[in-house]
Amino acid sequence: MSVDAEATPSALDQRVELDISGMTCAACASRIEKKLNKMDGVRATVNYATERAVVLGLPPVRAEEAVAVVEKAGYGASEVREGEESQGYTDRVTMLRNRLVVAALLTVPLGDVAIVLALAPQMRFPGWQWVLLVAAIPVVFWCAWPFHKAAWRNLRHGSTSMDTLVSLGILAAFSWSLISTILGAEDHEGFWLGYGIAPGGADSLYLEVAAAVTTFLLGGRYMEARSKRSARSVLSALAKLAPSSVRVIRDGVEAVIPIGELRVGDRFAIRPGERIATDGTVVLGSSALDTSMMTGEPIPREVTEGDTVLGGTVNTTGALIVRADRVGAHTQLAQMAATAEQAQARKASVQTQVDKVVSWFVPAVLVIALVTLTIWLLAGGGPRASFSAALSVLIIACPCALGLATPTALMVGVGRGGQLGILIKGPDALEASGVID
Image (tube, rainbow, N blue to C red):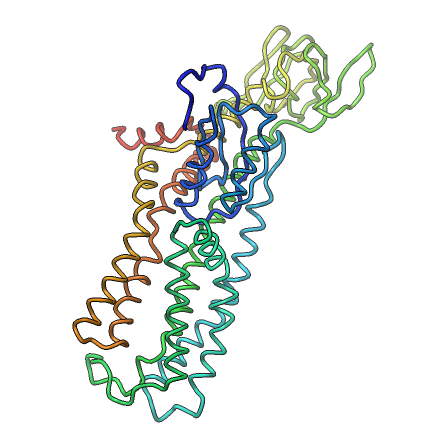
């Protein structure tokens, strides 16, 4: 069930955030979301772009149950602690970059040599097909391993995703090339090139297809991961505007303590050039504050005794003594960072529609590929032509960005707004801005 009818608003105020690892497309996020929403009294939203799940109505003591549900679905999960940053983005970017570099270095010569040897029989040498097969193995099995791993995980749980199409397309192209090499290529002339007929055996190998698809999709995943990391780094920078330490004055003695030990009512000193530690009221001194990072106002604001100041702003001229009024998560800076974080985690209406399309897109493509293979065989097209037509369906559907572009665009949009000093409170606001004249 989703949420109990008697679930009270106070119950839904309980909020737990989970870092999700292993998601590769919007279908993965949809699957995890359905699993979490089956928990009693829970309403969950999983965002593929932020790789986080927001679970409402789940007390922190039950967070382990939500982690167990996600892990049972075949993905990794961990509770997000305040002040912690996920290392997953950096690790994923590094992993994808390494595989992309290897794939690109092998795919370029593999594709060129395969095309030359396929179209120029006089340049073929004994065992040329086996040489190409060996060169393709690292690309097909190591570089494309993230796709195969995700496809196998989905298969074990009786589901499909974009990775299912990718893995099937790559393995099918390699397997057919291996079978053709073992059985021997057909000797009769092949397809029309526009300027002549291809020589026999030109269409026996699809290794360059398998390698090119792997490289292309790894490139897309790598750029997508970098975009996510850049957007998250904007939020991290916003959260880090507050200093890590503060000069607190207790019993007339000034001492430097970690910002986490500052309490409401404490007095602290701010020297020229330093950032205000937290929201408070000036009790002694006067100065000009640079509040541009908080309000967007480029002109420094003059403050004196009795004026309020915001944490994260910069003291430019005089020395100040400030009384702390709000600390920790209650400061305006912390709330702004939390708002931007939640804006990236929520879904826009267009993203919800995309998730619904993705859920049936993959099975539909698999059915179409199977029907294509069957029709070609029944029409007398032969195994080679029939397989080529079915493989084309899988390959064309593989790079589908339908489930990737929408959440990534929303996330990067919120992050870019933060860079420009614009706090976007949600994807609905971002969507509405498109119709502003």
